[in-house]
Length: 154
Image (cartoon, rainbow, N blue to C red; front, side):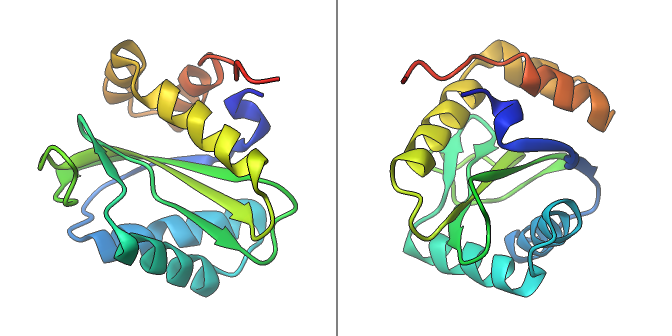
């Protein structure tokens, strides 16, 4: 599995002027709606519900919000780079500027876990994060993510 299996180029965005986690989730929900045709309200609610269980900021300026939805055929991804880092209640208390959202069907099971592991491994790579932070062009961001590591699970 590669990130291009779950991420469309039109689901990669650079966003300015987001001042709250709620507003970020609204933006992500809108991207999911535009790129994948899913209901933005359901996506937003699912993100909020998951975040209420515990923050998805994993440290080093990275957040991996994820949720299960009723409609997707498979796991779907959204990548957002923020122009200005946002407080996120991350494990290291640092604000986030790189956000990779994952959305899976309710019954995804192993597929969801493999996708989350792949995204986590990619976003832990300091070189990948440095390249992502150095680019403003969504097409370049998609290319950087597309070059990321393949899943090591069969």
